[in-house]
Image (cartoon, rainbow, N blue to C red; front, side):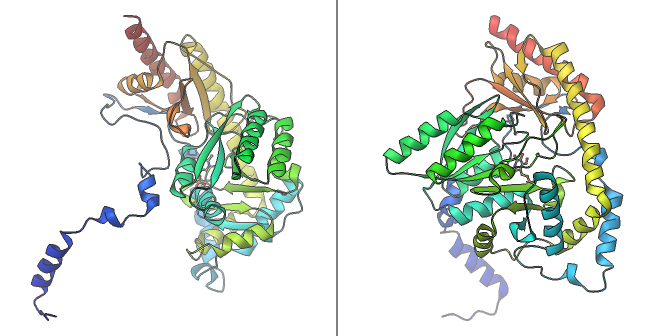
Length: 427
Ligand SMILES: Cc1ncc(COP(=O)(O)O)c(C=O)c1O
């Protein structure tokens, strides 16, 4: 072995040695399964730019004006003023008990489940909650069933876990359970079984629907018959614009066979990165066992607990519901006024998205492309399907973040884009 005291020559030698290797060879199969590094797949083409400042109907993030900055600062100050240093120490893999207790009180009050803090695990947003559930239940090659369409970020998580993703269509009532039953029976005859059925039963992303009560009951029965866990992604469940929320899968089943994931991202701010898993304590224990990141930030847990005192979160959510339903009304009426010749849609019952289906002669990629040129950005439907193929040509418009006063103009730009694509197709 040569001992070389010249640091530069060591660097040169290492450079020379490493130049023979390729880091891609070291990458895991998970990395090789993933084509993109982004959780959201709007399908925006890289080679088109807006000549004007675009109006963005893209991401599912809260309205900028609603972010409760002062209240969060105040809550953080109170959290850090605590006599001990608990918020600044490791908090353990399951998360701050008083915050889990607070969530349990809300689930008991709103969903009529006798929930305790033992039913909750705090995570780095609901995306992490889903990742942890996959890490707990899936080995490479295991089957998961999702709705088609569904949230593209979760499809990416399933791919990362090298799951085989099968899908079942949805209609106005949610997942088509007859189709699910047929698929599960077919798998059974092949000696195979799906481990997870992933649904967004409330305020669906991207489709905006909430599953009907009858479908919920059938889903619970079918999943139990075939022994598949239901993972209900409830990211938008509290943001409903109907007089009453739907009865949740967790309430109907009293938690049996259902894991629910939730998040503060949509009801407060996506940057918090705090979400949760709600499940039977025996499932929570299993998830904690495969959690290797030592938990997420106790400081944020303490802050959120402070923020939730005195009904502050409840008041905030009530205000959000009325703001977003007003924005939705504006978007729906502007689309009716300007875009009716080009698309149809059903008004969503909650959440952040309106899912529109283009009329026959229009292609979603072409409209999206022309939209960018006209100064309006939105997602095309393809990324929301496990096979990246949306036969029915949809567009997804997010109305949560766009300034209210831009909605009308956004719809006008969209109508112009549709008219141009339609004219080109006629030529
Ligand atoms: C349906 C759905 N689930 C999960 C997530 C991830 O949210 P979080 O910020 O809680 O990780 C999103 C974000 O857009 C979503 O739409």
